[in-house]
Length: 360
Image 1 (cartoon, rainbow, N blue to C red):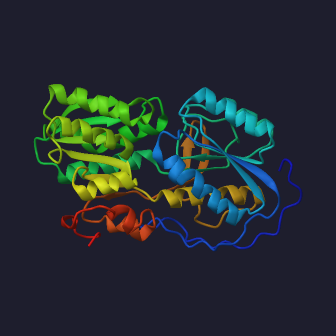
Image 2: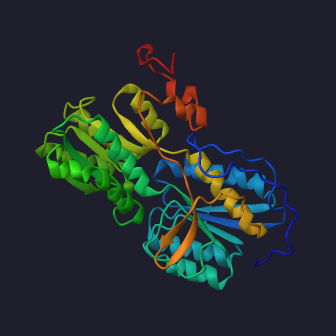
Image 3: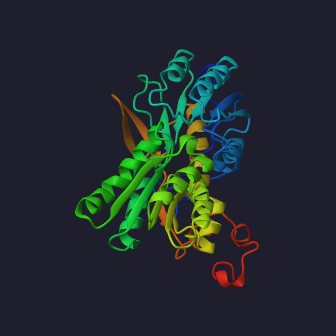
């Protein structure tokens, strides 16, 4: 491995094989790799709250455990593909020994080719490209976006009344993630649209997954339609839907489904303004990425079951550790507290006593 000498002595890390419903795992807080070096983590966009609140800091926290002598540098390309390429190449030139990247381009070949030429291993995070350079990716960690879409669609199928008018505001459809999420939704809901059980009023996208763009799309939809259900790309986008609904006099009258399980989204569920979220433990996701990165730095095989399946990307097969997905609503919101994704204080601060459990 470039710029790293002999393999370090690695303590054993015990993992629960495969996936468990709570998205927790039994990892010893022991180093996997003890030598010095540097890792670059190139994300998606700090305008999406999860990156600066969870992904970057949690990755750094666990890298300090699994590879305590590794310097971690994080990069925020603000959802701009050219920025991401430039940042990744700069990190490689600066001597990164591994590259963890949320590669949101369909074919991030400029990045992968540069890393491959520099003999730097790449771990893909969250986004699943359409094509990759041969033998350039060591592993993939994150949620299967199709499963997110399926969870959102299934929630609507299970809870929306017959005849419901549904509008979808996807995340940025220039990203593979948003397209796969959308495909997952429709795999569940299209038969209900075809049969007339539900009516699809609108199917749009918010550039950059931006809250303001989502709000504008929802406002536009509401000017011409009576909506019963809004399926939003994520919880940040759902936060954009809420003021649009409030302005239209529809607060708490429309089912709103997001994804991520953000603090703002969970508090909105408690308040009744958002209905549900397709949740996965983002702490687990970022911790898994740190573990995968440390194992690759150490050039050691991951424990059995760490990667649950092979993901086909173009002509390549990549080991994939998907994060379990659960639909969270008012009935099971305690799960996020049990998982450590939120504290009771974060969810309940300033809430009226009428909110009930888990706040009082």
